[in-house]
Image (cartoon, rainbow, N blue to C red):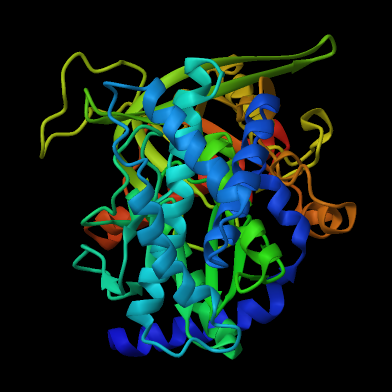
Length: 493
């Protein structure tokens, strides 16, 4: 099948998914409100100030909003004399307003070209970034809190192809998230692994289904390229209507349209951008337990080990390091299984281009269907693998080839000062009860599980002869037979 036919088939599938799994619920915006109380209060102040100032400038009134902002900007610049904050500039605010006006006056369909529309959206986002940067510099919050914040900026202004020879898709706008003290300017290039989120832009309000279908496709590719992406955010812009979409393991939930031609719609969109700048990375979908180490040119992944007994449960964590990925999460919904070839030995020097870490284990990372309490989950793969390992070890079955679990458990990390278990319940904490039941109820409940296994096998495609293939199948059958016979477990995988 040609690439064009495959693309057509995929878009048809996306439209079908849009009908089946698309849910509209405005409480989804609560997921991105900063978990930290001080940052939450600061986000509200920045939002109210930026919205008030924008409304004043758009109406060309000499209101107290404009005067108040000019005063704050002047005080900020004076306080930070000698520091690089040259982008807090009145003329740049006015330049942004010129672009914003073209977009916000489009109460029906957008009459100019999509390129002009992209530039107008760019102006809106840049305007908000100026406010965020100025207020973060002057805010009386700790340096670590500031360093956890970011600017939300454009990675691409116009419709452009990403720098991937195997990727024939095109994005409209991609957002990146540099540090809060970065220069406010669009990035020249953007790849999927660099994007925080994407926008799909249409000039007509009636094209919202097409926008969602294309947004689904872009988000799927982000999952494939970003190893630390737990869930994803995306935006559709159809004329003056902005919608934010949250992509979880089983459902896509979108907000109601925020109409930027209205005062309330502009306020809501500004609030979203400010909250994205000040919230935890985990609220944007990133996995804090997977980190790229630029000095070593490799990834670090923290692997939990859950020990559950009658006296309670205990979790320890072991760091592993990897450069090679055996399996990526290239589907929009489901387990989002990823497999990494890793080692527990931290590299002592930078991994050079063309080199890779000598792996000793394979790490399986997935959002598996589970029960809320691990001790009550009879289908917990970690439990079964540990039982198999312990049983085979006690019975001296060294002649049987099977995957041995090293460590495994549910992923946990810190969010808003608290350690949370990464499940769909904690992922959607903050939405209203009706939505929570739809996205996490019953068989939709998933837990983020990570398992370290050894030895590392080879893909089945590496088998050279029929005889070798039969030998492999015999080993598999023997392994499954022994697991059923000794452990009373039928793995079914």
